[in-house]
Image (cartoon, rainbow, N blue to C red):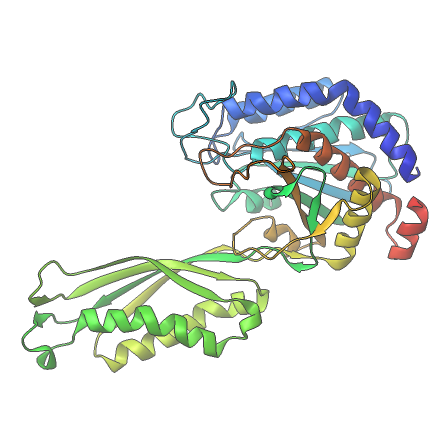
Length: 408
């Protein structure tokens, strides 16, 4: 199928279904569900896929589902959307689809991602029925992206078994509707949590030389660990330790016997991410011993960085240009935010895109805020991009020049 034919078929499909998709997104927005509690959301998706003649398989917890379109002959490409909401209050008083669930809101655009993948599913089902799908597309409606564990649960259930490539996207309110932000290599950051606990004998502030000055030592840990990391790790990896919580003592004239500091570790380089816990632990022990205190560290892995495969990015870029027109693809910056799509890319090649959701010259509604909203034209744009990407990856699994010639 040539590019112009695909664009025409997508236009015709969306002329019939776009209003349905907008209504579906608004329904999800009104009924947000948090990580691993997305029962209604899962049911709504499953019902619509079943009505389209597909056979969705709900994950064992009862939230999230997987559904294949097409035959097992040829390559298999996966498309992923996340379906959970955030524990935030919806502050949009001016819209009819404001969240009806107190303290819960789709403030990260997952309702949009879900709706885009649903629309893509319906289009691909039509393609498969017409014999135009040269392979299989696996649809992954993933639970619990905001609470790390959703991607790992999908993988544990064989969600990417036999998959050759995987693609996903995320709303980007800094990019205009009709544009897609792409980059090869790291596009998001690893994100881990660290808690440091320190202890000492305590004592009087008049005699710090007779005890261990725990507060002073904790202050050294707070400042010297981030500083030392900047000299021990290649700065291009962007390994960053930032503290968010510090507690020690309760009296001005007493040196406390314990204290705690907690923060996050973020990194754009996968190798540096793997090495970070041991390096931080050794630095912590070095600083603590210099001041005569004991220090322990609880290091909780979050997600690795999303590292886009170059070939997959080229496939996505080619598809976006064909589906949306020349100039649709724009460069995007690396982000220090975390995204569990990274777990899939540790196992198979793929790419993660940023979909423009801002009305041209409109207001930028940042993600993870109660006022977040999108220009709903982005739904149709997302369907075009995801459908074209899946077909591009299925049509051509060889060199990139073959992709270009096939779509010319």
